[in-house]
Length: 149
Image (cartoon, rainbow, N blue to C red):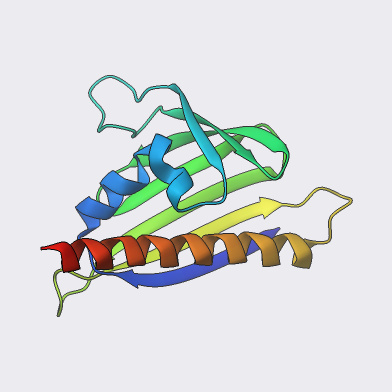
């Protein structure tokens, strides 16, 4: 089992980050992938939240992810099926900074099993690199938004 943990502080509220992370069609701005919503959220859920199924295309592979739960403090999603990785679980925790209300710490946790042909440390390296780059892009996006006002 591979476990990846990435943390980053962002100049945004947990609600702003949740809204951005659940705007699936726009996530390609931050992640090196294309996202398409196949099934919208369950009735009565927040936009892009619980029940949403999205298709992701990245590095020559296509797979589906489902949002299991989503609120202002936690987004939990998983890959449907065993490709490109098995037993995938993604947890994104959004924790407001008590001393600086406009600052939120994102803790991004991914657990999965690599395919037999791919060593764990290589997969972990690339996932961590992708997530770290995405969180930096998200932080820059909010930083630029603050400078516009």
